[in-house]
Image 1 (cartoon, rainbow, N blue to C red):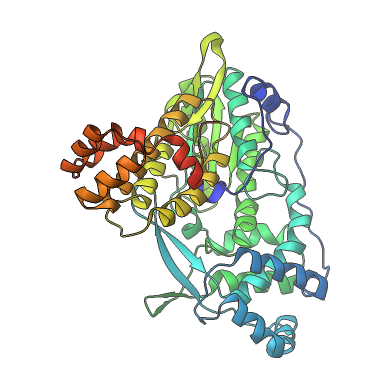
Image 2: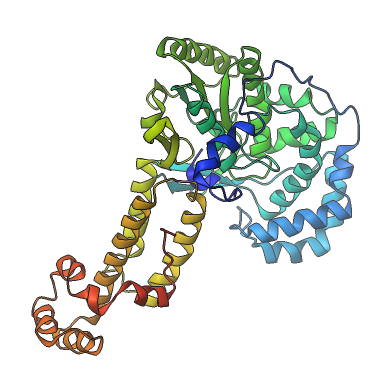
Length: 456
């Protein structure tokens, strides 16, 4: 589960000194409850008909439009799909109700991962996203209340920040060894029969189960070639997170039965114990539990270790004076952020400073909001200096000629000798940005451009 996937989920502002106490009081942050929720099927209720009611479809369409997203294999955008539905929806609805509807192929795209490699996303058509969203709105209220209280990913009223605070509370309580489990290509390896068996225990509408199976088995279009699919659930369809939680809830229940302290966010699961030996035992248990679901643990990325060197949803922990456990941005997340900013502020991209700062503003505001739980203002202050340093380099590069550099620096209040020196050495980008340009382009200049400060 990537940080990008979690970052859109927001949590309320907390003061650092209260965070551990608040986290301990949140649902799921104490010892695991031994009360098991029974798998209660919704019976034979006509859930598909409920999903296709006008009111539910209108709400689903609003959410699909708000999410925007690219076109699927049919090439239709959100707007074009809306026009298509004006004339074709009656026939499509009839096919859905009589069981003859066939989902379209899924368009596969690859996006680079922060740690290298790529993540494969399956993009359904806008029409299929609408149908899946309509199903989600009916199924989630029925299924979600039965999930473990230790599960946080893609659930109403639960956010990534809640999961981080809960993990912090476990560490603060003395559980200083974490069993950090990474599943190998989880969304690509989901076994259809195993998943549908678990789904059928929760909903009893054969029409919905048939439609879900067809979505799971829809072929994939890769570079113009159709590939059949026998496992996996596309990481890009509205139903996929709910289906993932249905499958993994079985592991949650077993961990609860054994009394473990743990936090799960989608396919990221951390179990907190008191000793390395206990952690190794839990890891063995998890290997067996996931194997029953036809899933594999990624051994190269999983570990039993101290929490200080591990990351969870982009955060890691450190111990302040007095033994208080605090939060910080994980090293890997900082490196990914810097790589992104380097790309956006590359001095050879041929974009105006206004364009650069506009893109940068959109990214930094979201990044700051997600990582506002970090108790490391000094790190954010250093990042502010680094970002503005790079923007000064961009500015210097765009002035190009020494004569222009001299004129612009003098107009901004730099002394004649200093402006002349920079004009003679314009290609010393980094050195100039760290010295004289601080006077000509101070922090307040970038504040005026709308570049947000990370340290507040």
